[in-house]
Length: 111
Length: 118
Image (cartoon, rainbow over all chains, first blue to last red; front, side, top):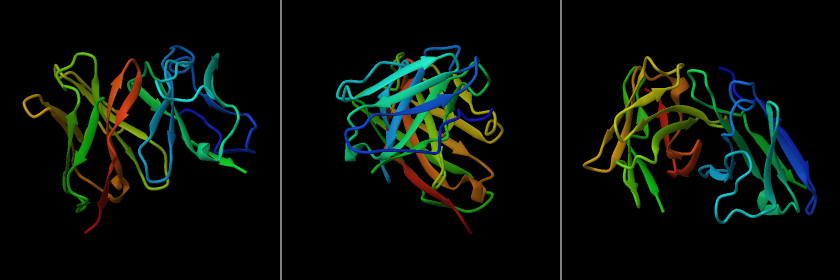
């Protein structure tokens, strides 16, 4: 099964807002509210930032928010900060035999 | 807070079998709340889910790796492990263990780089 589709890169200036999309199918993103987002800095393990489409784990800034419309989920980061520069991955439960599917990742550059 | 730590060889020869272990602390692999997963990331590439096992031994593997992978759990040591046979250069990656609850991977190990080379 193909990975979820994310843009390869996005960029924004400090203080701006950006969104990263994650497009799947009705068998994954569109069919279940089990979309999660992970931030990964170079050389580090991914860290959970959003789960169940819109929920934030304790300790994650409210500048990060998630949403979903149809087969596309989105991560929005408001008030961009230099420390937000990282790779971001979406993931979804899938009813296919794959069970779990990741997006290809998006590199966020803070200009 | 759950903490996970991978251990195993950093170098594997082609055609050999990789064995990695994840030690869990701050939580129990016997917990019915979690599924225990392995995920890998080739250098410069994205994440690939390998599979999971539950405390009861139920499991599920990525179909692309199903013929070569086995995940097991040792409740007495609070560990779970992965074996991947017939290793090739394409299996060179950072391997992560992670706990999964409610559809998301909430805790991750730091990752261990495994290189396949003779």
